[in-house]
Image (tube, rainbow, N blue to C red):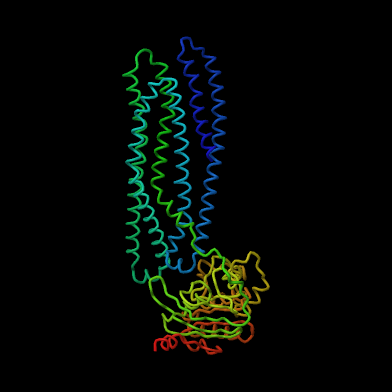
Length: 528
């Protein structure tokens, strides 16, 4: 990249220098038109070749910058995901998506690209200035005397302002994205409450803020053109005042140099403006690609569940100090069907997240066959488990793709088998394209019961040995809840090696469990 920047600047300088012989011949005493014409054809050929090579170098630089964007965006995506559930719950998904997709692009195209342009144009200005100083020291010094103070004053003047405008516009665009997503997701409630006008008012205010920041930015962007052109005119005026004798050649060379220096100075200042407007992206990218999670090296071995899950003196508190579990003990046997109940806030879902390894315990440990569950062996534990949460995650894909989530090759026979197990076989057969029917965004074409059955089918397709079922029937009607509970009961009886751990509010949903743990009573006993 350094070589390409230097070579592009050298090529641009050569393009300017190629005009000098034409200028000298034209300003000679007896110019020969045919010789000048032949020279112009030679210079034109050179300029075309030079621009072709410069275009290839520009394409190389652009591919390199886009490759950086791709790598940083992928690293940030992976880093955010690997920081775990606690981190994701503490952040806005709209903000994270905006940073992964747009900030990395801004960093590459609005920070690194302007840096390359600044380097290239600075080198070109340096080459031209040195050549001008050699040819006419006085003309070079006058131009240098005029141009440098203006460039310095502009850089000093816009630096703080552009950074502020860039941050303000970024935050405004982020809020706009969040507002649009929230409005569309909350359509029903907003429509019933006739509250859309409040969202529209906030949206308009956000647009006004973005427009205001953009107008201020464009005003400052206009200054480089005025300053660079003004500097050249002032330079010519000073040249006329201090130079004696014939000014034809000197003024001609000065004009050729100015012809290329004006756009270079303009580009340099515009790149500086763009860079200052986007410097906030540097910190965002740095924070995004840093990953403080465990490196995966500890003494715990891989997990193979055959006997028991031991929860030993388990405690957990959130970062805000709210304690959910304290000195909790529990033993879950292989093949057991265990029910967990308790009031809202008693820690049922938190216990699931701990058992799944999503949350790190603040005290105690969870052991599977005497092997502690840690970040390093969590992946081996996840290969054994299936999870049916309260809200089933549905991708914008087909029924088969949702059941075989993440599998590059789908076993269609296994899909049909698990659909039969969860009593969705007839429904799937009625779909327009069978198991290849798209389910719509977020499963918009599915009922609550169908989503829950797809979640169970996903765990069965995976051939999970432990199935975690987290209050997945709480939002269903009684008839659908009974059907889902019956399906789970059938699984418990038919798949003897399957360990079921079920959270439910209602006793009816846990009637078939071998054992039921009431977290309210446990907490009460611990308090007494």
